[in-house]
Image: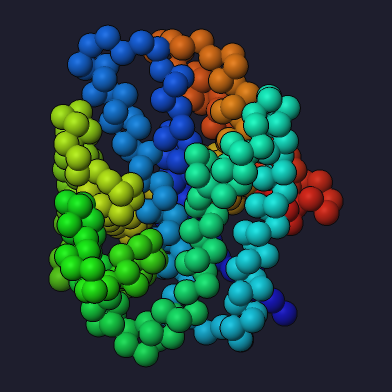
Amino acid sequence: MKTKKERIFYYDLLRAFAIIAVIICHLDHFFGPLTTPAQIIAQMTFHDIGDIGVPIFLMISGALLLNREYPSLSDFLKRRFSRIVYPFIFWIILILGQLYLHGYNSKFIWNVFIGEPSITWYFWTLIGIYLFIPVINSFVKEYGLKGVEYFLAIWFITMILNTFHSYPLWSFFDLNMFAGFIGYPLLGYWLANKKFNLSDKKVCIIGLLILLISLAIFVYCGYSKLDFLSPRYLNITNIFMGIGMFVFIMYLDRLNAFKKIKDNFIGKAIISLSVCSYGMYFSHVIVVKELSYHNPGSNLLFPLMFVLIVFLSWLLPYILSKIPYVKTISGV
């Protein structure tokens, strides 16, 4: 008899935060006019918090998928791809249909499909990562944390070079296998399994400090127009923001900071956001586009618009998941 898999609350909390963060990245145009430096910095801080979302998603994937026993390669690929491909097909039809109805040309619609001006780039990135997961899973099982640390050391070097636009150092010094998004799943696995020689409270505080300092640097670089922030997500500041958030939430959970909310309405809402997160990743594109035609452009009303967009982005996949035969393609 199959037992129900127990949920890990801090993963749910991280995933819920990550999907809200992704939505944050696409709400800049809902702000009103920014007329003072304080308003500009506040808006940039809000937006830059959103850049933590994608790293967190990928780090959770690594923490959950690596160092696992899978019945076969085909079984792993079938399970992973069915969970992301069918919802993608369903939602992309709705997204492209919406654009067609609003009069967008075929070239723009095609570019949305392949992820050029659109969040669908993440789907194609995820495909590449899932194709490589069985390879690095075997590597992690063989070499353990020491092997992961070897990979991450080289990955960090390439990310530092990326940050300062110095990669590659020489055209034939090829570190491309270390220079992409694949480092985030390995980083998530390492953080979830590494035992630090510090108390949980100290590690939690260090995580918070890493998050706040890296976020402040990120905002400062953006405000000062310093060109240290590209490529997006593959720069050292983004990495440390992801590390800080992941460690902070994970160790808060180990300190039982969430004990009181796990079984009440807040905890259930967090789990629901987590469960619906993949569907929300696509549904928010539709919600944001529709509400952009009714945009009040007011800083005063922005919090209301933000809450409304998050709620509707959750509601769409949640309702669809309750319809027979639709749940498997709803992203829930």
